[in-house]
Image (cartoon, rainbow, N blue to C red; front, side, top):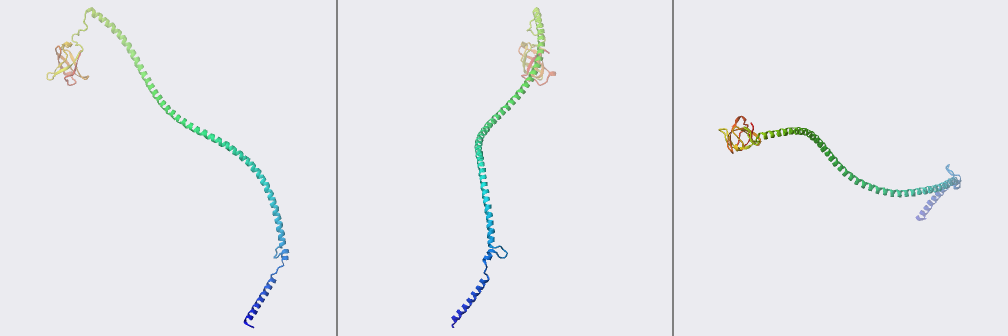
Length: 282
């Protein structure tokens, strides 16, 4: 026997042993599937019982499904009815919403117009308030002016009443003087007296100016003389711009000028050329 034959023989032997072991394993692990299906194993029910249980459960689930489908169909019908009612309400609400939108647009237009009118009225009111304020100020001014006028009227009325009384007294005095004047005229006419002739010792009312001053001798030269009725012994009042300055006594009278003495006792200032002189009854 050659080496190849020996190898083949050994290989066959090994394979034989392997197949034998495989057969033993297959025999040991063989199950009676009918018993497994009917009786089950390891305390578990058989496959047939499991199938029947599953079928029963499936039937129950099918019945539940049918009932659920029927309930769903009823629910769908109810929902469709509710949806139809809701759709009807929705259509009604949409119609009302459309009408409300139109009303809102109309109201918006009215509000816009009212706002515009309100702004116009506000401006007019502001103008009227300004005019009212001016009128109130004018009324206050008029009232103040009226009060002042009333006060002035009262004062003038009082003065007028006083003047009326004074006028009445003057009228009475005038009547008395007229009566006396008439009597004097009658006496003058009866005795032939010239009323234009000056009285003795009383100079006529005349005025003039100081022409020259001689201070050492206290004498002055004035511009009025005997032609104006001035006589020695007459007195002259000296003024400057309406202010009393002093007093003079005529010593010598010529037709157009006179010489007068400065009376120191009556002096209230320094006499100057050009000062005014007036006759006096002293």
